[in-house]
Length: 236
Image (tube, rainbow, N blue to C red; front, top):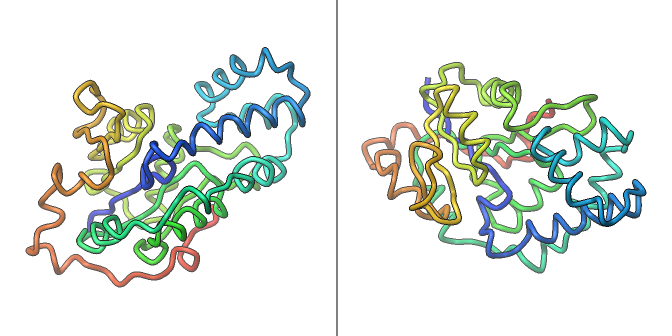
């Protein structure tokens, strides 16, 4: 069985410097106020609590406010002006082409948002598949829950955690994957201050520096034929 490298999407495949996360938080805040009716002065604390407790603010909204996840996706994720922010990244494309193992996107976002990000970066054809959070499933799971990592392994067709790699900007996700036996790379604001994961970097383009063996020519036989993730993506 060949190794699988799982890539988080938001604030990982593209830089946090684009401030997409700030725009996302603002859209979520607006949703709390306008759609749910939470007083504006209470939103920050509730939003933080839901994110810390459930991995996604949306899970708290569905559990406690009967929010329709697809309505949330339409008015938050799909309302982000990503076309103005995320641009084609040729360096990232080249890096992914040189990675000689199975490549898989593993995101807490819903499928439309993930595919949009990949398309804008120009890397939609560089992955073997996509594991996303399916908002249509009642009480859906997401990172950092163990069930979501097992779901990603099943989607990618791998059962040995020792052959699983993850790069993610979330310390909680990195810690959860490491407990399962995955090799982990934390994309941190300051790599020198992070104590999460097996390796720490500040930019996705630094991956070959910490795991050079996965980019060595001797691994050429591990290269697999790629298809657009829109074709190979699993829905559950």
